[in-house]
Length: 566
Ligand code: GLC
Picture 1: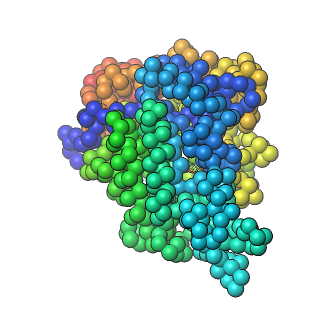
Picture 2: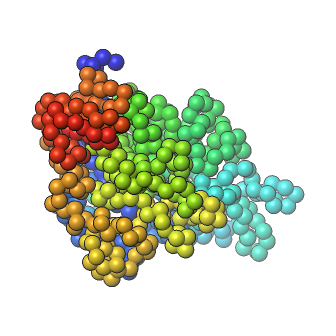
Picture 3: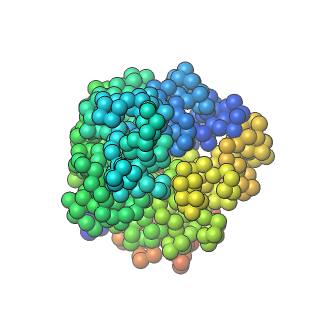
């Protein structure tokens, strides 16, 4: 690629999602209005101004629907009701109205792959006979073996253990098995059954009519299973197709008969038709698919608008690797008319302020947290790299996702004792896999205001904050030059000012060596030094930098980023 090559990004179009900065709220841990230790919608509404000040465009809410909370709300028992722990449907209306008045869009999380076992559909299926219409909503099968005592196939749950559980029939006899790719409390829906698509059309319309701007679609790559539910030939509960990315598409579909099956695309198109009944709405797929050309198939013009870019999130912190993923993302998404997304943290992975302080060979696999027996992360290095990596990301064209707390530089709460851990992965693997609780701990708002640092007024907290959260409290960073919070605000302000989300992007090889990455977007040079030697800062006007006291033609140290107006 020559210096002058601009990469087409398809985000010059006005649609908001092509360039939006979308902030993920994990409702139980953002802000707690009623002081019970679990975050809620009134708590969030009260804090919306602080997000407007941060400069985001939209919020994606992890699920707040009625749920037994076996998987922190990803087990839904009523798709049209707010769970009482988070408030009421009226609380949501208030939140939505306030967000709109602040110019912030709202995306809700829809979970179509599975329901809670407490959902009325599953309860009806349990009560009905094998072969009934009610059982047809899920994957109920007879077991193998002389007495049906073996699961119908060899699939494993993503959270550990078998992906099948056997039920007791209404007459008390041992009966059929049902499929759950996640916890046994999360039975998979049967998308071959047209009734399911009809149900979801109406669920989507319910929220669209309320005025939400779109959906994040959970486990979008798993909704449709291969006909006949054949055995998997590759094992890796958490593979999410990354480890099989060198197989052909046909081989991959056969090897893992529950991810990325062709039938998924029909389900997506159906969603898209509903979305298109309304103006200006968008959907983002949680589709953990690799490689990028395969993932790009999910964002063709009549499918999703966006898809998370997990290859970017899981990339090695290394210039050549990042350059390749960025180029491939822009090119491959571009081929199908989509813009790229970028993300470094979410509620399923180790916070990047900690993850980037772990040596590559010690980094737990995606979805696993840091185990007490793992080598300790280098938190100072992690934070420094996180600030550099975020500053690199937010200058890229396309849409970026932020996870609550990263604007504070919040580290992973990896010290959590076992007794507090709630992720089903922890219980299902007897603690062998520590799970994702460490990235889900409530946010510190005001240092020392309460034991929960102002998460609420009572100090209660469903997961306790570690002692080091105090120093990351928002009030200690507000207005403080050099703080991570002020860095984020400045990045988002300049990004908006220079239209970087929909900018003209090219790699700036003329400013790059083997330890640095440089690109130019709408006349702004973004330079990141991945170290170890300091590099000279090119001439121009410094717009924003992670390095305190940086000057033009001074030296950019290791793991620092600067934005320069050329
Ligand atoms: C997605 C969610 C994760 C959840 C799982 C099952 O991967 O992001 O938090 O546990 O789906 O719904």
